[in-house]
Image (cartoon, rainbow over all chains, first blue to last red; front, side):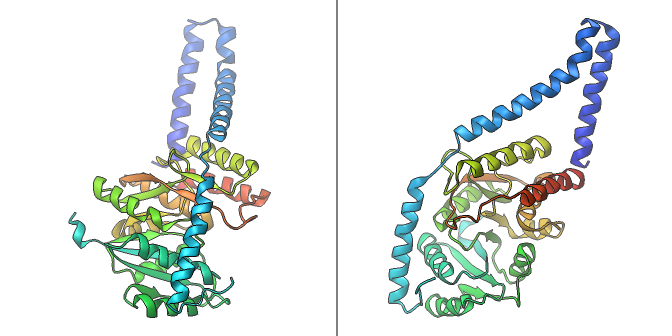
Length: 89
Length: 239
């Protein structure tokens, strides 16, 4: 099944639940009508939270740049010795 | 799988990587002393003499270890992999970038992970502990993170780093997946891993560090963002 169809079926199930709630009146109707909005807003907030947390915890590796420079120097030395042209880029 | 009989074909597409190709070849040989491997350089007619350097490297390391399989001009990444695959004699294929943003020192961890788990694909991820990125400013990190959250929400891809291009594939799996991919650029990388995930391939991840050395190359303009969104919609509909 294509992924968009999976998402649509999920949406259909959620909508069916919502309509069911509207008709069953377990929760006062005025609240039930607003549920989709709550859902969308929560989804948006969750997304923003994930972006924010991910940004704060974004793994960086400044030492890697240094290690890379060392590796490059080592490689250039070896290759120069062996006759490979490693002149300026 | 009998570890002694595995051969790894490392496909490196190049365009104007005269210096980097020599460095990367040296580093691959340094970090894979005990493995049977070959490096397949797919050069798209670089005007800077990349192919000359590769020939020098072939004299040093052997023409059976370094294969030069060039093309006449820039023809795109996907076709570069397909071209490289045709010449690959290993039962595993590694794809990696030539500009040293992917460091060969991670190759043993890819191989190790595959041997431990029997995975069909091992993909490098920059976004987990042990991995990381250097050289990105805040804006770039923000777009990367936002793009990733969007892709995770919409696609449920099963991997943490969708656009990464440092991967180890079982050769048969790569051949199978690549035949059904049509996108270009980094969306191509996304399409590959999402299609593989949908097919039920066993995919494992290893942390990698990514050093962005070309200042300004990671600028993401409006057009790239639009391309990315189009790519997401395309993948939602077709996978």
